Length: 432
Figure (tube, rainbow, N blue to C red):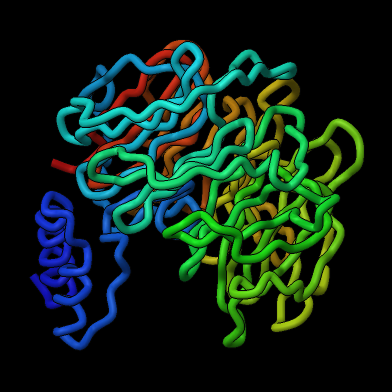
């Protein structure tokens, strides 16, 4: 074991011990004493939407090359409520935001055994007019010893990771005059520095994007007169400048995450019954945006204070799946869940050259790990393919759930978490 692996194991063990004792600071102090910096999100965690970097790429995973005839080994499953919010994982704690009767619930499960550790409920009267599901849409965000969850009605909750005790709550739609969108609020919060930042959509009050203090929930800043989208904000450093990147209802904007000051914006989106839900995909100094509903894809090149459009094309029009960037190419779903042809494509994002396209697949969400691409289809079928631009090579396939699997999956320490309308399931994908 090299020094990096030793430090990861040391930090992970300390995290588990200190989570029980309630002292996260001890972990940080231990790492600092070594003269090294280390992210609080330990290697293997899946603490937020699309994993540690919000790009669908899992770190330090070793996956099996094939599965048994009956599919991957089931670790555990639990009956849960409605909602299309996926699981977030920190250490051996898996957190789900779901709804039972007239309560939105945050439930923490033991990620290894599936036992519920605690549940905290919040009253809700939300009724969807566009979707046959009234539960939460946004994956919760775990940061340090807290969980930040955003409900379909725009309520932002902060609860304690260890106990589930509620620390604070904000009624963002009420406070900032935001509407519910087509499907309720569905953008996951992002943590940056001392703030948790949300795509609220209070445009009339110049509160399209709002930052809240982590410890109190008090408003830190508000910015832009944009309505919300279903895309979750992400943060990146380009040329030494930190950017909060947000796809709003009709624009792509960059803000200073400390102040909310707008750096630049470009048009992205289309008026009418459309949505944008994929997270911006960042590579080098480039950003790829994608949406369906006639919007298509757009590649931009960023600098500290502007973004230039390199091209706009319908080569990759994804309804809500965020593409995966790997080894200079982009793997993405082209099409919509609610009708029409769907294909998995591998393209060069700079030249738009298409290496291959696999049609006839089900609409899927994507995770990349260990040189493989996991395609979680909405019909409950999981496919694993080689992460290669040479050809589409399917390694394994298995039916994991019945019904509809819209919630984004999570991968942590070989354990793969998925949810349909009634159940959350954990299977083992690790190489044994």
